[in-house]
Length: 217
Image (cartoon, rainbow, N blue to C red):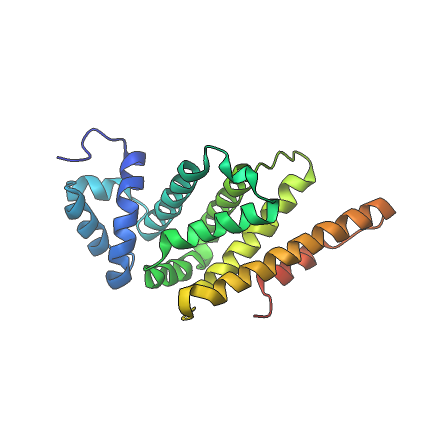
């Protein structure tokens, strides 16, 4: 049957989008997993073997599959023709387009990820996605900027998802405007940070990240 010659990692990535589609109606459940397996012609027992951790395994695989799609779409480097802010905006919009139509599955996924027992995996998954976005955007920082850029982007992305799931505007214009405002905040942050460093003053990164994570809409 299809999938018999694939590794469990490959199978997880292959099944994840269909599980997400089923999760719109059935949640991140065994029923959603079985539907995706049937659609792909994969034995149910093998599919279950690929997701021993249940819902969080399914959700993390969905995120990883989006990462893989994004990497494939921008691996040729054409993104580097844009300004940095436009590179990040393009990558964020790509990710949102990849999950469009599955807002209810995303809403349920966010609720599961927010559970205390899942926070560590959720943070790691978000960090990996932010790291990939910055690498595709051409970032080569190896000092503390490497970490602050990814932390800030994690904050923007998580806040954007919270807006996206409730956005009923035409073409998700509210979400697009939200992204533009947050990116502008980052550009201002970079300018301010450069000025402070030149002056030898300190600045509160944690406070700034908090403002990005819980901004006024």
